Image (cartoon, rainbow, N blue to C red; front, top):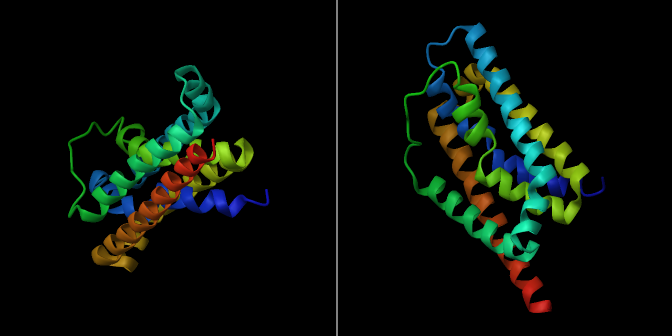
Length: 193
């Protein structure tokens, strides 16, 4: 567990709970406290299940497909870079109409809490730091996202719209830097062969 923070921080940045808060607030606008708690619970369970399943089977899937860790680092880094660049340059996250009964599972649980950025980051971290540290970090970040959503009203008032956007853009910038690091490491692995 010496590498806990090296695993926790990239997943914290990838989850970006504060950054997705405005979207969460838009999607749950008008919900009663009971509906809000149910949605947060549903999103947390969905995100946790998808993350843990992907952590458990991700390496097997890569192996079956003949994809090396270096391949995934380069492709994953490129994907993370595009996602982070899109987030940094976009003015608003797209809004869609969604069934309130499944809202917690999709789109809040997946892909807002656990999306391509989190899954890509997680599979790469598992190969570098192991399953236990990555699973614990993923679980703690999902729990943190649930707490942020439970406190969404207070956090939104404190940060304001501009503050939430600023935090989201900073998280995207950090994710871009992590993406470049992953690409660099993947290339270094190829060059070392």
